Length: 116
Image (cartoon, rainbow, N blue to C red; front, side, top):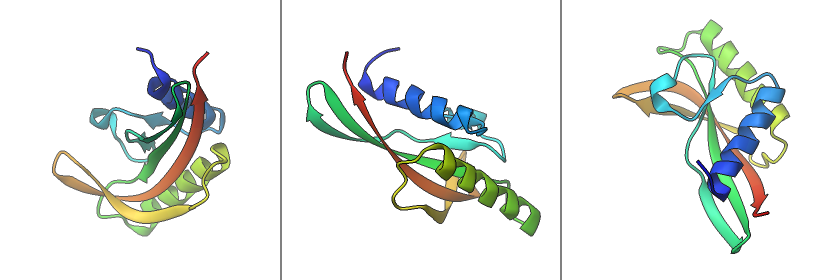
């Protein structure tokens, strides 16, 4: 796979992995305690530079008891520490997959990628 959007996903994944965050961009692989990266919003600065804003979710299994919520907070904090371009912090939400609502924290991460 190739292209600036794919490169941005891989760059974000590298940052998260280096920060100790387990992540996936495949909704079929979601499990509690990992970060889920959704497709980004894309702002084209020019043909060679894109600004990508990814929604990254810290998810836990429902119903979200205090122990799992504490794990979700830790994962959200780890995402923020690993990916420095998170001006909006984290927002509580639910992540819907396969008809199931999972308690989640959403962190928006902005990455700029350049074509070589």
